[in-house]
Image (cartoon, rainbow, N blue to C red; front, side, top):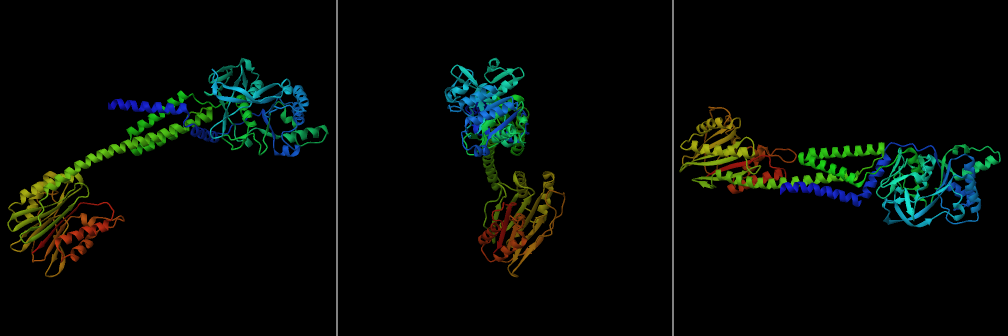
Amino acid sequence: MKRLVSYLLPGLCVFLIGLLIYSGFFQTQEMSAYDWLMRTRPAKAASPEIVIIEIADDTLKSLGRWPLPREFHAALIRVLTDSGCRMIIFDIMFSEPTMADDTLAEAIRKSGRVYLPFAFRIDKELKSSGGVPVSREILGGVADTLKSSVKAVGHINIFVDNDGKVRSLPLWVRHGDKLWPALGFLAAADFLGYPLEKMNLRRGSVSLDRRLTIPLDSQGACWINYSGAWTKTFAHFSYIDVLKAYEAGKKNVQSWFDLSVFKDKICFIGLTAAGTSDFRANPYDPVYPMVGTQANLCDSILRNDFIRRPQPWIRTLIDAGIFLAAGWICLVFSPLPAFLSCCGLGVIYTAIVWSLFSLWGIFPDLFLPLVSIALVYGAVLLRKFFEEAQKRLVLEKELEIAASIQRSFLPPELRRLANVGIRTYLKPAKFIGGDFYDIIILDGSTFGFFIGDVSGKGVSAALIMAQVISLLRVIAQGKRDPAQVLNLLNNKLQTILKGRFVTGQYVVVHAQEGFWEGSSAGHMPLLSFDKRQGTLRELLSSSGAPLGLIENISYETIKRQFVPGDKILMYTDGWIESRDFSGKEFGIIRLKEVFYNSRGEDLDILLSRLESRHKEFERNAPQHDDLTAVILEFF
């Protein structure tokens, strides 16, 4: 079942990727990526054969109003024709007849190189069998008085994306039984000498010949390969300047404008005055004149340089491949290497897409693959987190059991033996630790108190601790000399620990005789409060080597008398070596201070103050080491 799910889940994700691509769910984001590719690719030189004549603010200011009287257009046609231009293409609608149409029609007829536009209302819900947009209504045609005079007519329809930008246009529109070409396409085909009736229109492309094929997307649209921003592409000339230069030439007046620049050129004429309606946003400019759209279409065909959007099924394969690669990386590597590898995969894929787009105009998906990499990483990371959390829960339960077993090795709680009061404290840094203590009853008035600290922490230290306690209880029976017990214990451990060691301190209290003896194996000195003198001393500071390191070590035993009110504090190094967030240690001075200031208190209060003072010092800092203490009071 688990294997079946491991196959079905990637398949389901690939299906979802295909669904997102075919539905265009991330179309807006992909178009933003497309705009970024457009703006960052190397600049492309526009065709020198194309020039744009702008009806800009200066023209309207000079000629007074819009629309301009058609006599001016007739004059411009005569100027451009006399200048030897190859084609005159108006991106201006001449739908309604006017009184000056005869004059304009005559100029168009004599020129024989004028192209006029018209526009359709495209029915988006209708598609022809060839994937060509279909229209049942003409929004703006060519006035009947002008139709017979023009060289050809083409539509100026565009596709506006959801974000208001123009990135493509229909190369053909089907109206009735006829296919109508886009104006810029028509101009380029005529310029190159390709008759439209011989073109091969297929789903996904239009072939002019073997060397020139124009790619189309699934909507029958051609992506506009803009050469750059409006002000940085094509040669721009003012409509009014052209007319003024012509008038100056007729009057034999020297003009700064040489009309010979139009010889053999394709002249696009369009409205660019501020505040007019013939503007849309595109990848380069928030406000772009639409005459430039037709000029860029013509330019792309002349340069045989197009934007190619792979078919949805190809993009699905690419995006699914990136998704599966990211999934493999995340499953094989640990989180940090997986994160770095996924970042590398994203960078490499982005570089490949940028190179494909810059060199060959190929635009695969960019946003969806990058998002899928991030989502895969997040999903796998989340899955690993839950798996680790589950493992941690299991481990914590096992450690709780181990801690319970470890506590079972400790002696039962004893608060008093004969005239000796006893309090013990053990708090591991983790669930289990290497600190321990033991109480050995030698007879009715003689008691042994051992405290130890195994090197290291965790499970291994806890196992050693269990061994030490077991050996200690066997060795200590019948022996009153602490040094002898430590020596025998050391020799046993030396053959077992193999490089590990245990610090220990063993005190034997002779309650009836009123004295205690103690010996230390590399352990912290104990603190002894003398009631008669009111002093606090460190004892057993001269200790031998830790247990388990060197065989046959001799340990020293010291002997001290006690009176009622004397107290002893045996402790491990976790107390004095614990740190706060700044790294400052608790230290022996603080430990002595708490012990001395609580010398007259009950043992429960003394232990409570030790614990609270230590917590106050550490605050929320993690516990540095195991904490163990044995406190004795003599009555």
